[in-house]
Length: 206
Length: 206
Image 1 (cartoon, rainbow over the protein chains, first blue to last red):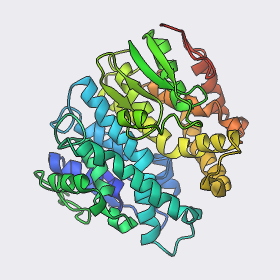
Image 2: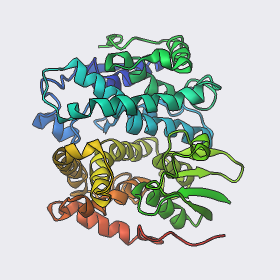
Image 3: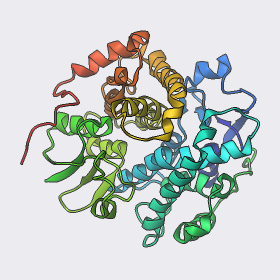
Image 4: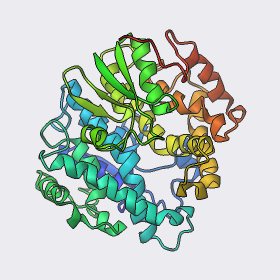
């Protein structure tokens, strides 16, 4: 069975739990507390040199990190990743947008507000992160005003990737009511079969 | 012919010029000066709402943004993107690593040093960016100590994605001599057929 190195409050980890649950793929969870330093141990870094979760170890021992690469690996060949070349590029477009323009503002601002005890130089950029996060939310807002989902006209891993931190953006100080098309899309994502909430660690397969 | 919205000093744009040149795909360049605000005009934002280059308009009018999604679109089906599912996930792993952990430190620090006239709150994080960028360089350093290329045992778009800003890291104040496996890999990338330098706008196909 595959092992998921997981930390429940992390939206990046939630993406993978949500996908595996929706696809019915069995997995073993290994809780990895990033606040307690569990991603900085020699054992973890020996397997995953970037020192981040989520990360997966397949049953045959092969290792993979980066949440969106993990989504791609498990979704390829399923209904959640289209086959057409341009559709796939659009899925990736939104997934790279999520990691570059969205997560560093929306997720990091949420993280800094959730853990006020942590010293972090990024606190000096809280105002900038608010403006850049609002700008990042405005990009899917425009697209979703005339599209039900982000890519290929249907629910894909691009929606899973962007849902994870968008649905929790209020915890980062963002007002989702300013983004009505995004709010309506969040509801459509929640209605997908097999959806689980971020605080749901998923079925225990072991 | 496809149109590439391009800005020569940008490593993200360079990735796309390098790939298209290596694959022999004709393209028309539209120089888009980000410093002069060319990505903030209503015309540009109407096409590419994230307001960034590179971006492409295909001959049939379809639009795509995000450098690494563009690489994927053009490389799929060629020698520069493997077919095996796990190999492809590893290509994406390094490409997401590049956009999340590498570019925001190495490229942004280079950008802030290249344009001292620009007001930017991120200057307060220059020390943090140096440490985080060195940490980001140490991840491929470990991998490349025992692998010729990043994924699938051969030159792929993962190498193109990570090469773009790594080879220019000195301009961000990083000492590449501390990363000998990365330096040797940079040389291997430079030796690939059809390689062009970052200040080479590529062949004029028009």
